[in-house]
Figure 1 (cartoon, rainbow, N blue to C red):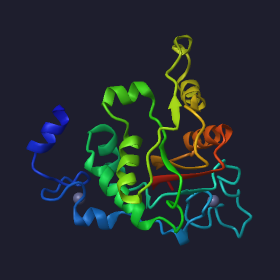
Figure 2: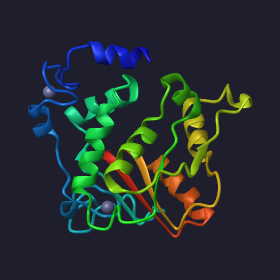
Figure 3: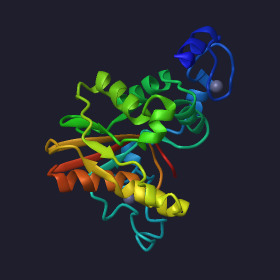
Amino acid sequence: MLRALTGLLAPPACLACRAPGTTPLCAACRRALRVLRPEAVCPRCGLPRPCDGGGGGRGRGCPAADAPWARAWAPVAYTGPATALVAALKFRGALPCASLMAAQVAALAPPGLLAGGVLAPVPTHPARARRRGYDQADVLACALARRSGLAVEACLTRAGPRSRQLGAGRAERLQDGRLHLRCRRAPPSRVVLVDDVHTTGATLRAAAAALRRGGAAEVVAVTWARTL
Ligand SMILES: [Zn+2]
Ligand SMILES: [Zn+2]
């Protein structure tokens, strides 16, 4: 509430470069976003081609060759003003960011990607979402629903840390959080997973695997930004 009021009182400014006038991004920062055209990226991992490190296929191979999704895609690279916009969505309650992100996803999505099924946000850890007062993937999915006509369905749930793991190392806790994604109920046959950033893909993999185990025939992973 306080954040919303502050947002109303503060003069509009670019969330990346702080230039006054336009929010969430000024024209210069919008132009500085690196767009990943669908035809220029690998449909499995969303990285610019060649995704295997080059060498005419002699590289290490597509990092998502064995991923449980049919396709992973993001419209922009997670670099420059994109990192500022994601940080604003995550930590400063800048929900208008979600509207801009959803507009870009809807405008640049490859044909058929948003053509059926439901939008399922990848749930943030519940303690984190409680602290922030919202779940950024859910906010992004709702904004995308308005643009795509697909409904949002909270197919997945993420368990909180168990008390006996309080002493566990950070890596173990992260691993545990990822493994505790599960379906609330039987998911629809096609699910479009929605999150803000695709980095290693570990969380998206856990989410897609849970949906496939739950009975979804096709899962695609859509994020706004892709770490290169
Ligand atoms: Zn700017
Ligand atoms: Zn690839």
